[in-house]
Length: 184
Image (cartoon, one colour):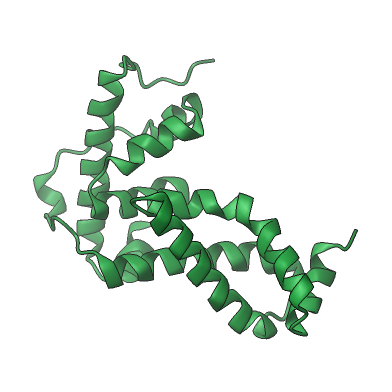
């Protein structure tokens, strides 16, 4: 079996078999990322395809094959954001100061839900809220970075995250999850 770094080097030489193997190796890992940002499975597939076009067009510039995992993930996330900008608009821009801050138990809640349940809840969020929630809570970007990526203010990012959390809290309550403490 070929290791990931050798596979990257073969892709850098435009080896079609290596590209197919590389594409398939990451599909299972990164389709979930695409699904979180997309509104449908079809959109997620479009984002994934578009990301891999970018990846294969730029893989020759990857100087450290051992860093390929992070590079591919970052490319997929940025492709999802670009897809969002090209196809959607934020539904609301609100000022952060007008929103009551909610607690930050969401990483604990995320641990108690199945990935399918989480995906279903995230898909119910308005587009702008979903993007900010994914970037902040799931992918670990800060509000300044999110603002730069999405072309919004840092306060708008904070506001959209707060509103996303509130909508999720309401959905969790409907599911009977009223305690946001992590189940030990």
